Image 1 (cartoon, rainbow, N blue to C red):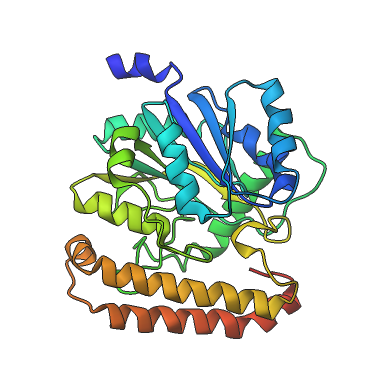
Image 2 (spheres, helix red, strand yellow; image 1 turned 45 degrees about the horizontal axis):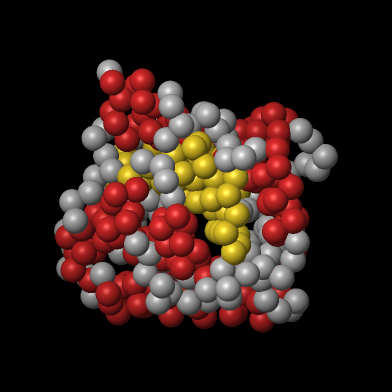
Length: 319
């Protein structure tokens, strides 16, 4: 196939927004420099730390890295749109500054995109609860895969095969299904054609932690008829919260105040998303559920999480 020949060429612009994560970038950014990556666009959302110095140091070793800085902290949707407008690749992949992309993932995503005739393909996005320090990349990847497999063994009898709850919209994109699955949306780590991304763009009205900003993009894309596939064999693993400080979780040093602020913006953003995309959600899931009903279910989920925090702190698993 002609596209397989094209695949061997560098054709993907990876876009990674970042804010106050200079301490992580030397670990996370190199994982996005896979053979299919034509450029890695790092959009610094006006970080007050040494983000520029770290990125420029990495760029000295790999010219594919490009650094862009915003003039003020404008949040992830703006940073992603800035990345889209500056990208040169035929395809775009949105990464995170606090996660690592396992080797072979971009090749897997673009292969699946062509095999399934899709316009968007999302990766599996597990959350890692612990990670040993002072290890090289290959050892880190082995450790991450080991934790994923252990988690899957422990949850095997509990896994709900449905990836997305049609009412709460809770998604379980940390589960590795047996094969790719067509879905109305995926997690934030996804591959998309640049042409489609330029048409859809991210809604910059989301505030605070910008919860639902990527779901908004994806549901609107799905509403236009774009085919979206979840590819469980591509993995972008989120690093432990104990390591991934900064970003959307940045704020007060007080744990309770920080979390309450995070969930307050999550509720506000979720309501904005639900009311804006009521018809698109009805089309995606075939259910006529009011935004108020969905928001009430979401609020109950948040309450359960908040109530569970004391126990999580005791056993050492802070979200």
